[in-house]
Length: 273
Ligand SMILES: Nc1ncnc2c1ncn2[C@@H]1O[C@H](COP(=O)(O)OP(=O)(O)O)[C@@H](O)[C@H]1O
Ligand SMILES: [Mg+2]
Image (cartoon, rainbow, N blue to C red; front, top):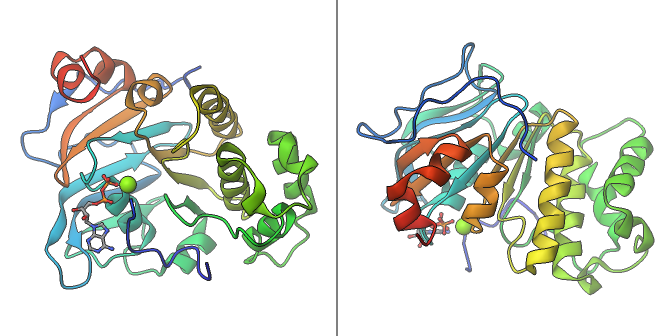
């Protein structure tokens, strides 16, 4: 792959949250998500748009994450979860809505400029350079930095010890779970202020999934808010401070992870009962 952000296609422990979210509610007027006082740290607000001149995929869709939070987006295949993440990262032109980072409107910025502002994004597909070594992947992650990034690399290796062991191996030779660690590690190399992960546990075993979730919680505890899409809805909502259920490009349910897990409608339709 040449540009990690060029993929517009799609082949396809809880962190304490002092601010309660109220009860999980079906969104009547979609996008009516209650912001925290002072506004969420990162928000894609009332986003409407699609790919190129194609039809709208997102319809007044709002997703956000607050400082100190893990926010999780779940929903059926094709619901627009990845599209929502790409919209927040600046990979599609919104017809309506805006993206704000730390109260600044960044709707007009390119993905590269958003990285410079502190966004880290791990896309669902093509998220590592398979022919490069693990260490080269991490170095590529630091591409926007002019300073010495060795300390950050040490931190990434502390977080993912297996990557240190395999640092001179081609990333393509690693297992699925290890590749995802490379992808997350690469995003961390920019020292992001917020991390966006699209299905970080795709295609890994349940044990590896649990390990990855533990690492993600660890990252969140270092003070990096995390906005992530997950197909393992139940497990993801268990670690989520806030959850979004998207259906057909719209907010269907929003609440704390606990509230969504307890909601009979959400359980029946999205969590297998
Ligand atoms: N590059 C693209 N060009 C046109 N349509 C796309 C593209 N990527 C995804 N879509 C369409 O957008 C819709 C939502 O897809 P996606 O955001 O990938 O869903 P999810 O991540 O929830 O499974 C689907 O109908 C899909 O076919
Ligand atoms: Mg997706």
